[in-house]
Image (cartoon, rainbow, N blue to C red; front, side, top):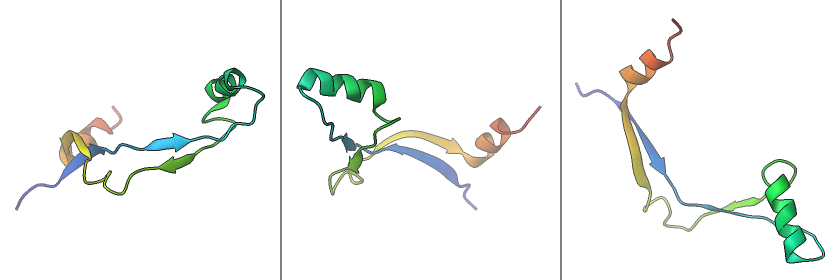
Length: 71
């Protein structure tokens, strides 16, 4: 019987933010200081993003379980 593994993939996506400001410089400052915390964006990805996913790592389940044990 074959052993199951965990496959970690990276899927390209983008966040779009709508920032209200008087100018681009101010909007960028707001985004840099508050993006992901006080303002949220919209997650978007192309239809074929999953087809183009990059395999990042493969772990055996056994290794993961051993790493999570408390000494």
